[in-house]
Image (cartoon, rainbow, N blue to C red; front, side, top):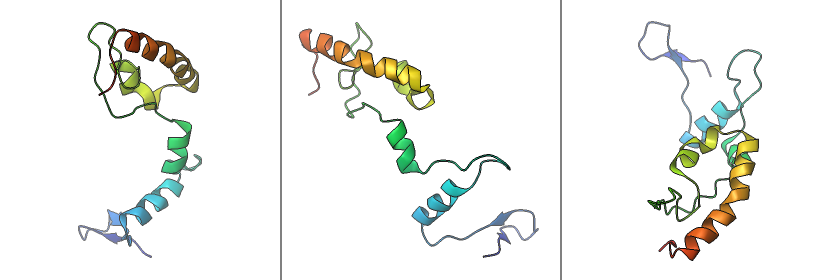
Length: 109
């Protein structure tokens, strides 16, 4: 399908998609820049960066850990940008943090 200009000036082409999902599939296969590898589909990205979040998001004031997943606010915010090594370090420490929170009586409702 040929792209058309959305303003009629010929400089801003766009493509119509049958659905939002079709657009996301198409965009996930396109390289970011010439010569760059295609980006991963969303399902593969989620598999690589599996978050321990359980959607509780209540933080203990003393330790600054989430009582649901055990991460700090900074770790939650930076989760998707962190290196695999850093994610492994955080995941390794989470059981200890959650155990300590449980001992203090801090548990998700």
